[in-house]
Image (cartoon, rainbow, N blue to C red; front, side):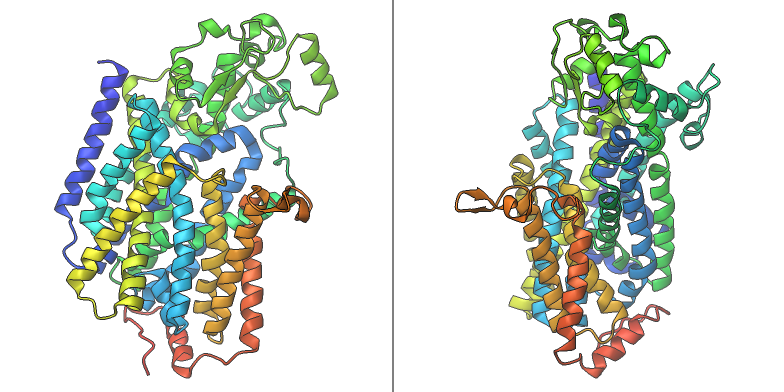
Length: 602
C-alpha cells in the first residue's frame, strides 16, 4: 500500500470517528449545547481541554519555531504552559463557582451591565476570529500536503467536517470528539518522536534523548547541534536569544501567558463539569495531558534540526569541512520528501551560485570570519527556505519512518487544528446566541429557539472562519500570537478584576476592556502599515517598526493588559462603587467550596 492510500485510510478513519461521536452525542438542549449538560467526567474534560488548548500552533508550529530559534523559542513553551497553570489555579475554579455558560455572561453579571457583556462579546469575537485564521490555515496546509488537494479545497473539507460535529453536537458533541482528537494527536506526536529519539540517541524517551549522547559518539545531541549550527553561521542553539531583545522575549512570554488564561474557548471547558472540585481535577488532568506533548516538543525540534542539516549538509554533521562543495546535497539528488513539500510552497530552493547544490546556512551572520569562509567557498546566500510549519509534519519523512507513521502524523495535525477550531466556533456561537440574542436583544426567547439560533450562529461562524482562512487579512502574520495578545489585553484583566477586586465597578471594567483592546489593535495595525495619514505610513509617526522599546506587535498584549488595568482602576476611583450585593457575590465566588451557583441576588 502506497503512502497516499495509507494517509487516506488514517485520515478518513479519524473523520468517521469524529462524525460518529457527534451523532451519538448530539445536543438536545441549550445546557447540552453550551456546557455539555454540565456532567462531563473530569478525566474526559481534561483530555478535551488539552485537545481544545493544543491547537495547530502547538502541534504543527511550536516545534518548528523552537527548531528555528533554538533557546529563544522557549518563550512559546513558557508562555503557553505558564498561562495554562495560571488559568487552572487562578480562574477556572472561581468561574465554575459562578456557574454560567460563557465568559461574557460572567462579565455581564459580575459588572451588573449588559454593556459590559456586549463589550466582552466584541473582545471575544475579535480574539477568536483572529485565532481561527491560524487554525483554518493549518487545516489547509495539512490537507494540501497529505491529501493531494489544493489549500482552498482543504479548507472547504475542514469546514464540512467541523460543521458535521460542531453544529449538531454543540459542546456535548465537541467535548467527546475532542477526547478522540486528543488520542489521535498525542499518538501522532509521540510515536515518531520515540522512533527518532531511539534512532539518534538509543533512548526511546524523547525527553531523555534530548540530553543523551548520540549513538556511537561521545557527545550529546545538544552539544553536537550547537557545534553544527555555529559552523553554519547560526547562533548557539542552546543559548541564542531572539534578535529583537531580551525585553521583547520577556514581554512576549507574558503576553502568551495571560492571553492563554484569557482565552474564552478554553475557559468554557470548565463550565462542563459538575462541581468546583471537578473543575480543579480536570485542570490537573489537562496539565498532565498537555505536558506529554509540551515536554516532547523541544526534543522533536532539536532532532528535526539535526536530521534536516544532516540531509542537506552532511559535512557539518560528520565533522568534515562544511564549506567543501561535496558536503552540500546535489539538488537533483534531493530525497522524495523534499520534492513532496516543494509542491506546497512551504519549502523552496533557489540556486543562487549556480552550482546545483543546496547551501543552507545563516547568510545574515555577523561573524566576519564565517562570512569570509562562505564567500571563499563561492556561496552567494542561503538557498533553502524551510517554513517552520513543516518541521513536525515532515519530520517522519526526513527520518525515513514507515508510511503508517507519516499517515498518523497527518491525522494528528488535522485533529489538532479541527479540535481548536471547534472550540473557538463554540465560543463564538455562544457569545452571539446566548450573550447577544438572549441576554440583550430577545430575553424572552424560548430554549428551542435559542438552541436553533446557536446552531445558526455556529454555521455562520464556520463560513466566516473559512473565508478568513481562504482570504487572510493583511495583518495575519503571527495571527495565533496576535489572538493571545488580544485576549491578554482585553478579557484577562476584566476576569481577574471581576474575581479578585470586589470594588471594581462596571464603568472601570468597560473602560479598561476598550482601552486594552484599542491600544493593542492600534499598535498592531500601525506596525503592519494599515494606517495612512497624508500619504505617509502611520508607523513612521511612532518611530518606525518596534519603536516601543523593541516590542513586536505580537508581544504587545502584555502592555495592553497593563493599560487595561491602569484605565480600569483610574475610572473606578472617580465613579460609584458596585452595589453591596455584587460585592457579597464576589466574596462568595472567591471561596470555591461546593458547587452551589451564585447569582448575585440579594
